[in-house]
Length: 179
Image (cartoon, rainbow, N blue to C red; front, side, top):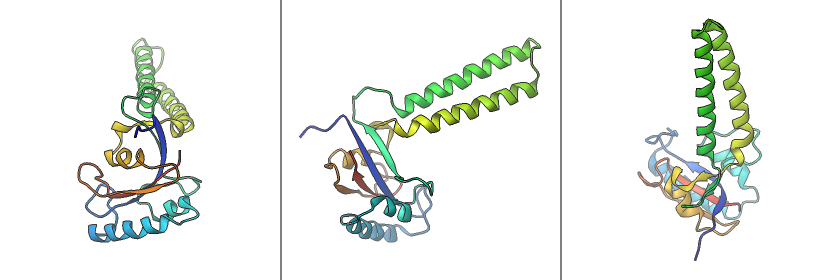
């Protein structure tokens, strides 16, 4: 069966104290909770509410659909999150070099450089906030369990990426394919 070029998934991260997420539970407790949440998710009316309540990933309280990632499959070309962020970083570097050149020429002082650069960085952050959520991530840039599970799910189906030090190092992921 061939996989789609792009998918959208939503997930609940169930982590434990020995991972980067530093959740306040043991590995055994996390595994048991992940199994319980997977079972509940299969019949839940509101997966987003479950993400808000249970995910160990940072979530904005007002986000109507937290934990969503759009993924590009292997070898699929197109603008993606990583390229977008590299472009923004390059623009910041160019702006900084422009301002340093002006400062060295005596056209601005250090305070003006810092103020202008801070304003420019805030503008770039606002641009990132507007566009980044809709941009897909290359499958290879994410933990491999996201793609390994997500691309094999049918739309609306829910699966589990089990903890693995290499493929799912943050813990267990209950993954729902949205599109």
